[in-house]
Image (cartoon, rainbow, N blue to C red; front, side):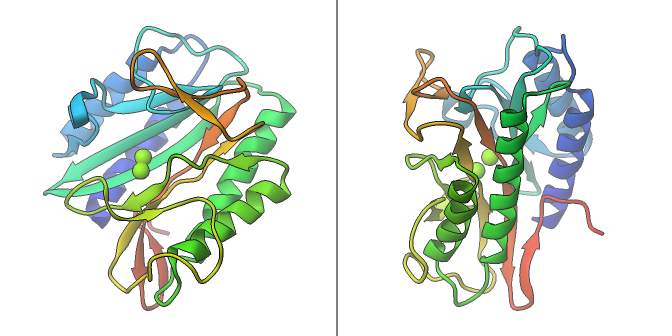
Amino acid sequence: MAASGAVLAECLDRLEAAVAPGVTTADLDAMAEEFIVSKGGVPSFKGYHGFPGSICPSINAEVVHAIPGPVALVEGDIVSIDCGVTLDGWVSDSARTIPVGEVSGVAASLMDATRRSLAAGIQAARPGNRTGDIGAAVQEVVERAGFQVVRTLVGHGVGRSMHEEPQVPNFGKPGTGVLLEEGVVIAIEPMVTQGDHEVILGHDGWVVTTKDGGLAAHFEHTVAITASGPRILTRHAG
Ligand code: MG
Ligand code: MG
């Protein structure tokens, strides 16, 4: 899983470097697929329940699951790129929200809070803790910053399949939920909204957007729960 995660980390690094005004989400999708295949991997998203792309590039009020296409990024946008890699049968799942050029202060704050909430959630991913400890840690950082966490979409176990037990909500109470045991691997993925946390499904049956049209950010890592603490598998070593 660490090998799969390393490919995914490098893939997202490359996409982040390529994000610029005028680049289309289809361009980014093609880059991702080409890179993953060049490393001997398979884009986990492609064909998943019929999804047509290798990434989900969700822009501004889009939270997750946007389909790549001819839409070009615009200066001031934020784009959340979610991607999965299957390597030797092991899946990794990671996302990050990337600014397109100069973005508004609130967009920058939203991304910062979401990134920090992921870090807090990861710190709670330890043997003996429960999924509610992760959710509570994420929620506290987000709400302290004046934002909200999406309720209807959650993190998840990951392994041979992209979505396994347990569910890992981004809200909750400490000491509640599923017990986290050594060796379990989970995708922790705060989805955070500028305004209200309610979301709606788009007409294409895939894209999820904020109901109030406010911005959304999404950061995700695949994390192994080990005796010595959380090990982030979708980040470069060192
Ligand atoms: Mg993901
Ligand atoms: Mg995920």
